[in-house]
Amino acid sequence: MDYMTIISQVLLIVGILTLFVNIITEVMKNTFGILKGSKVINVFVLILSLVATVGVFLAYWQIKQLEITWYIIAAFIIVGFLVAYAAMFGYDKLLKHFEKGTGGK
Image 1 (cartoon, rainbow, N blue to C red):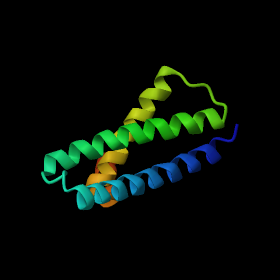
Image 2 (cartoon, rainbow, N blue to C red; image 1 turned 90 degrees about the horizontal axis):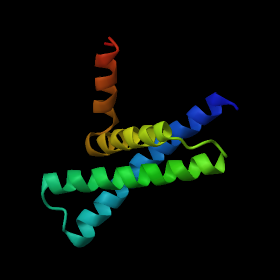
Image 3 (cartoon, one colour; image 1 turned 180 degrees about the horizontal axis):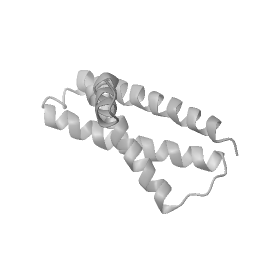
Image 4 (cartoon, helix red, strand yellow; image 1 turned 180 degrees about the vertical axis):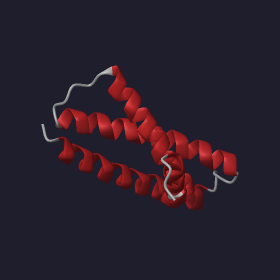
């Protein structure tokens, strides 16, 4: 199993999921107008991110014929939170938090 290929594909999937969540959120806000409050939008983004991320990664894991265990599901959920954060605040803020935590400048 080539882990570098899997890691690069996972990062690509995370980027596409973030773009997907942003587009769906904007369409919902502009079409239906139901997402007016900031908290409502954030809850919608969080739920959409978690559902989409877990679903996409379960499909990816099955396509790659990898074993699905409880900790893989937990990792998918954590990645879903990262997708939601990136969709809400953008990658710049996310990268600043990672740099701050690792001692980067």
